[in-house]
Image (cartoon, rainbow, N blue to C red; front, side, top):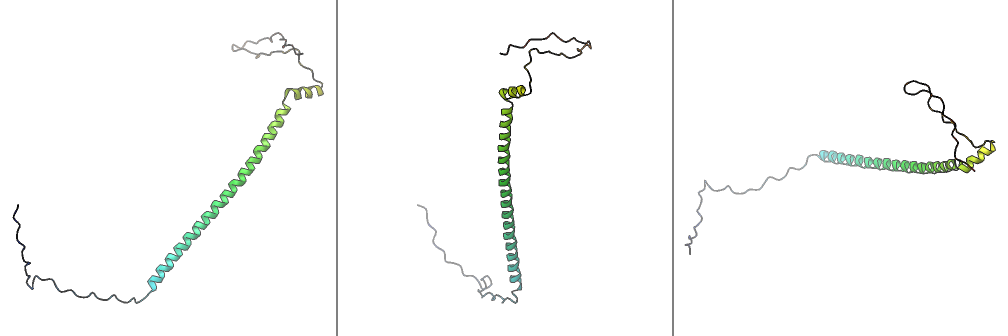
Length: 140
């Protein structure tokens, strides 16, 4: 076991090395004017009011844009429906049976021969005669 050193008595300090005695701090000075505080409070209130108005205007603008988008979507849906109806009408008019009925009403007859017309000149510049008539497949 190690030897333990005996406790030492605290050394007394001389008057020159002693700390000065504690004394009271001076009392706070009374405020002469509350003008600064009122200006500070008014500035903060003004900034808060401007911030609230800004958020209110932003919210109003966002709501207006949302209403405009909803109206545009409704118009787009109506136009899409109209385009679909028009496409269905065009498809019905282009049906072979409808075209044949229109042709009969105009006293048209089906073609029995088809003439194939090649280009008038070849790459070398020579003219080409039309080919012979080609018979289409037999229709009814």
